[in-house]
Image (cartoon, rainbow, N blue to C red; front, side, top):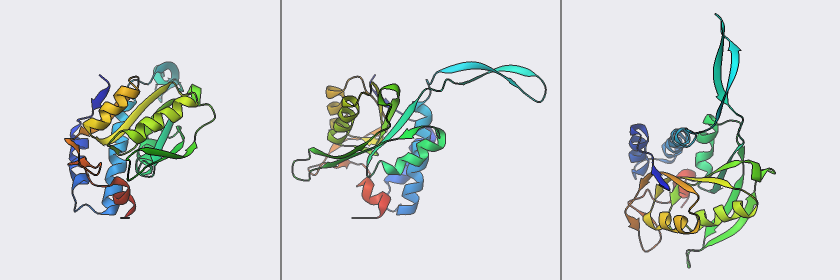
Length: 208
């Protein structure tokens, strides 16, 4: 299945707090970072391991370590920045790229304005991060920007998704797995996820 809802109790509890209109900017940022770290744990479940020998205080033993698979984390600006540190706490060796896509308020279509990625794109597994998967336009554009530059293994991680966004990404990029903490009801006339959590970027940075 292309869409994976991560229903861990801690994630669902923190998601309820982050949706609350009374949650302030500081707490919102902290919760978003915590949820991103917990979700990254699930995304990295199938990372390859190799066996190595180490010496404990008592004896030598064979243990498993990561094979050194190259990972890349790519936040979609600006809201995706709120999730980066949470992911890096779990995967500190990952390289970080940035993609800038904004949604035209009239057409709701994505407009690309920035893309900076690690040089070895083709050798990395990428995790695109953005709190909201609404119309899917920004996510589709970000995935295309990575693919054009040689990326072949891409996952999308978002906090909350709308069915419309899931459908859009699935139609254009059926090879990309979507990880989310919740698939909400629908989009309203302004392209906001309902019930959602409002504008994630504004809530992270305290803007309007």
